[in-house]
Length: 348
Ligand code: F6P
Image (cartoon, rainbow, N blue to C red):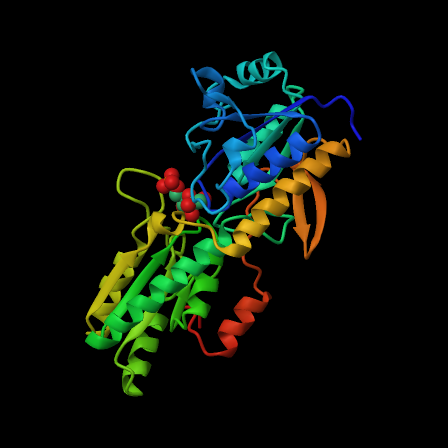
């Protein structure tokens, strides 16, 4: 038991993910139960510097929020205070507020910022969240299940219109540099082709699959592509004038139409995958992570991220998380499954 803790704070940073409010609730209730004061920082660390940006969190504030998407604290993914030379100011403000431990809920970007904060003497506990599932050293990230579930539902819906018209539908899903969402939702929705960043694709292979299907009397095809996928020897597709990923499905649809003569359409599910109510597993996971964060603080742990290894909670130094993306391993079960059921992965 660490008797020095009187006041903790929690913030959510980076892209929102379903399940964040469950984390906030569990941290708040667990903290209050231990006699700690709990503060919420709004909009990443921005709230430290604006009126009403630091709010007390009590039982009322976190009642009936577990099922809500987004984050009651707001977030930003433009707010790396260290990139704008404000790191020391953030640390000073946290000290000024008498915060003993900062609970930072985030993906790799936000946890990297949290790691930098520790260098300024701010004790931090990290909690993993990201729909992309791309954090190292943990088996689960809050938001991934909701994103995969909704992507699967969307693909299911697109199958009926695609079969009705005998078309090719190319469906783009988020995931940044990794293909976890595409792979899991694509398998779950029985996509014919799944393209992920970890396996650069050959468009001729994709076109050949579409033709093979047509030759077998299947005049439609469902292609699920991760936003970060790229052709062999080629580049990722970005939104014009920015470095943001997006648009690969459109290119692939045009190419498939040219190569096969089949009518193709594309759609990007985009931020739909981040919105809406968390699934039950994500609610449970968020609450679990929040509870583990409180237990870690009580036990005196600092500057670590709470992680899950199977069902076992463990603590990983924030330094080990920073700046790494957990890619889909080539020997993982999901990829083996896809290959075993004959899904085309765009490689030869
Ligand atoms: O990291 C989560 C994520 O949704 C990625 O899948 C996606 O590339 C990115 O965030 C989009 O961010 P923004 O909300 O800035 O468009």
